[in-house]
Structure formats: structure tokens, C-alpha cells
Amino acid sequence: MQVLATFEHSTFVEIAISELEEKGITAIYAVPLDLRKKEPRLLDSIHRADGISFIDKGMIFAFMFGTIGTSKGFVWQGGPIIWGIAGSVIGFLIGVALNWFLYLSKRNKNQLQLRKGKKGDIILIVTCEANQVSVVEDILWDHKALGLAIT
Image (cartoon, rainbow, N blue to C red; front, side, top):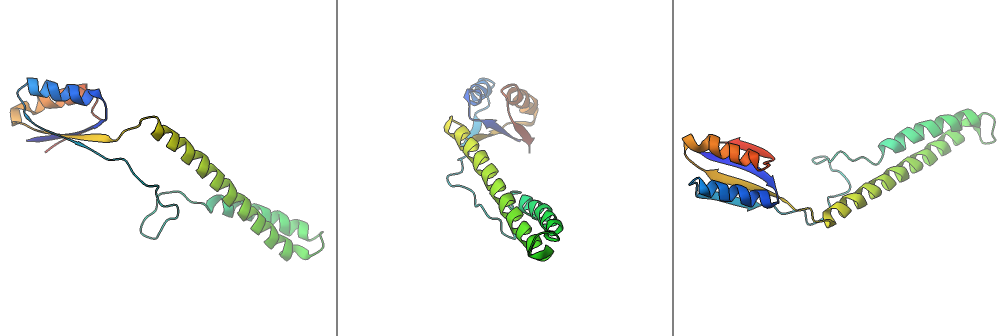
């Protein structure tokens, strides 16, 4: 049987491996995962979306400023249509700029965490007999496995 576990890159992995070897299990494979080397794409396509949208706040601000511009346009020179369109454009640009600023501040914070030594995860594959599965499972959970699967 095979037991698959994921770990954060730490000394707990080494301790778990040495404990498994003490129990007589020698078929142990540790596969480190690489970190992302390049920045993710900023704009989404129709086939891939990451949940980040730059126009959602822009549309909300466009609606609010357009409504205000239209109502004030009845009093101001130029009329409600011109001021409604102008308010919508200004509101949209403010919303997109706000989203862009929030995105940049989050991205810089995430990059700062990566510089602090954040490492990739490790997948540990242990091949053992069916009667050893519970022992292997207990050892891996005791050494802070993130997830576990038995196949």
C-alpha cells in the first residue's frame, strides 16, 4: 500500500523519515515542490480566472457617480446626460484605481512573505505493507502532515 502525505518544508519531514526507517520501512520517497518562478498573469481569459477583478469597484463607483451626476445635471449647465456620463467615467476610473492600489499593496505584502524564507511543500510517498498503514499514518500525523491519502 502507498501512503501519500504533504508537509511544509521543515525538519519535521526529516524526523518523520528517520522514524519510519526505524520501524523498518525503507521505501520512502520525498518529492519537493518548486515555488512559482514568475508572476501570475494579471488579466483573466475566458478559460482561466483567478477571482481578481479590476472592474467590480469601478462599476459600483460608475453607478454612484453617474446617478449623482445625472441628478445634479438638471441644475448644472450641460444637462443630465452629459453630467451622468461624466460622473460614470470619473467613478469608473476612481474604482479601477482603487482596485489597482489594493492589488499592489497585497502583492507587495505577499512578495515580502516569500522573501522571508517561505519554501515549497514536500510530498512524501511511503510504500508499506497493509498492516503497517496505521503506524505510518500515526507517525506522519504526529509530525505535522498537512494532508494524507492512503491508496
